[in-house]
View (cartoon, one colour):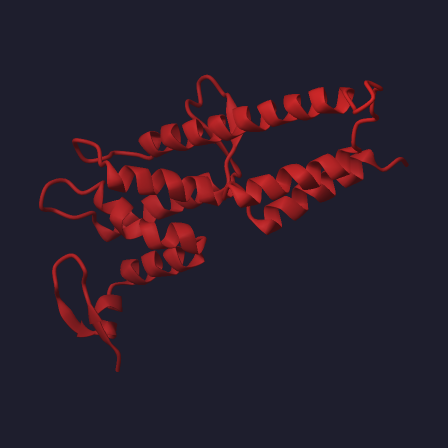
Length: 192
């Protein structure tokens, strides 16, 4: 069979030894279903929930992975549910937030995903502000042309395509998300 080695404790053995526990199998299945950029960070991120030398119990790890999956799949982030302000958040933003937390871990063990949500909200807020500045600049440029005449602004579909290309370039949106966004704009701007 295949050999396996635990990166945390150094235990080595057949890969089946790591899959004996049903909770371990559930955890691995859930990590495998995540976006690859997020899946590779789940292990180090879950270590932030460990209390001292004691690691995170597998049942708790599965619950945390399920909660994380729900946050990412929502496609948006809210810093505080009581306030309700939401920003679009791509899987790349969640991965960047996890990387930031792993690189600069909090002083104590985490109890929930609130800190990650706050970081991702900040990233999403920055992206939203940058997109707004780009729209404003584009609107200003659209009003001016070489001869001082007013230029007709680009159609919404062209604007959506340009914006999504930028988002993909910045790692804030996948091609699939971009295509879905452009399709929504196209359906809204098509008469009938």
